[in-house]
Length: 366
Image (cartoon, rainbow, N blue to C red; front, top):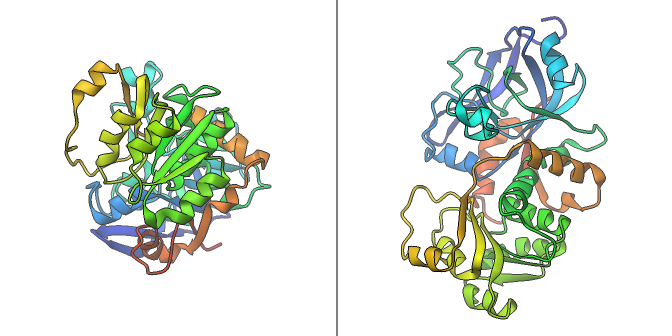
């Protein structure tokens, strides 16, 4: 493989809360695959859940499902199919679908019966170099990639993933329209991305909830266009939403909070009759206390579950990032060296005193 090193430095998860540095061989490719040289890999809440062992992913595994990088080697058919070549910067979608099962052929490729997720494929599965916590990464023939302008810094380009989630979960799935009232439960990076996406499509009123410790994030939500923010530890969130909406309720409620289950029940009370609730924040498979299904029935609430992002969301995100219209750099708080992946995850999880991470990424050695 002329022009590339023989091995790639990678951080490999070998057990719960255990990441180990390894040098892994860079594989040969065929006409349908490629090798990506990573510039950055985003960190999100599911990285922490994988680190903690809650997702029960195979091990040993290279985590990282938000990769941005430059094509270092590509097969001829892959170049034609993806419309990219060596030297092009691309964002890589998280999921790899089979393209042939019923969900795939019906257009729901993210629900593929045989889907793989880059950061959950063990290094023992050939060719081994899966996942974004690495200098180089293998791109499967069924990958979905999106060209990203090289004018952007890697830190800005890699925001494609959370912002894509904001467009899909808070706009596409609930069908948010100009003038709609939207409540976003949780002011993390995907909550803030939801604010940006809803403001971009002309939502009328945007309300964001968070904890007392989220003061900085709630302030940033207002900067990005939220009309109201609610500290749920010092205010009664459901009552505040009713006051703001003059008793009507919100057209759309999006829950992107993690672990806490109360936002699920709050959402049913906050949404208007006939409105839509999107559940995107995972709760560790905990049961939801005080879930009253009759509210769903009597109010004819449309409840949607959201997993992952699809190409339309990613394309909307990349266009907005490239436009420079929104100061998304305010969301990015930390860069970490690839070797400091554990510190990056623990910082996001608020395990490091006096450090508040919103959006962060790993930067591999050059």
